[in-house]
Image (tube, rainbow, N blue to C red; front, side, top):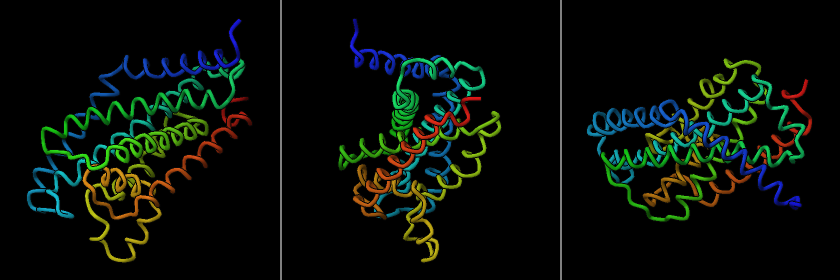
Length: 259
């Protein structure tokens, strides 16, 4: 007879494999579009606009924006994968199978989040390979680079989970990415240093969590950042803790998934 720990591991690994196979099975929709979109960013912002901007923070503009573009791909795909998958489970009414199974809520959350992280990291790897056709990417601190990209994927996978719980239609899945996530991403220092902004907008930018992710990731690659790295990690870890607690509380209450 299997121990409870073994049962929990089987439940988690099964959910993780289901989530992973889901986006791998439809790779022309999940993996190919981000690669094409990010290639366009490199061509337009890097080659066409970057040649007129010159250097930023001592680096070629293409090299400077590469970490931000990679991070943007990871954030968007981690978020989208969990939001669409969980809402589909609600819409097709097979989320009940998980709810009645002897699986702790934290394993359900971990299974969905890990699937989102896997897609985000795989897309990030693909975009990184694409970026090498346009510029070189030195790695100054491998530990910071890897840890920040993983933490960022976890944070936005949690955000996608919460979005899916509250969503009542497929249209509501797109509201957060369109009206909140996209503006925050473009204002998160991907294409510029906040030192170029007026003082008011520099201070306003500090309320954008994506700014901390992009700068910490850029620091891991290039060794430059507009934000102290310790503060960036502290804020991201705090956000992950808060989102995890909130998601688990929603699961325990059955918000949006029990009728």
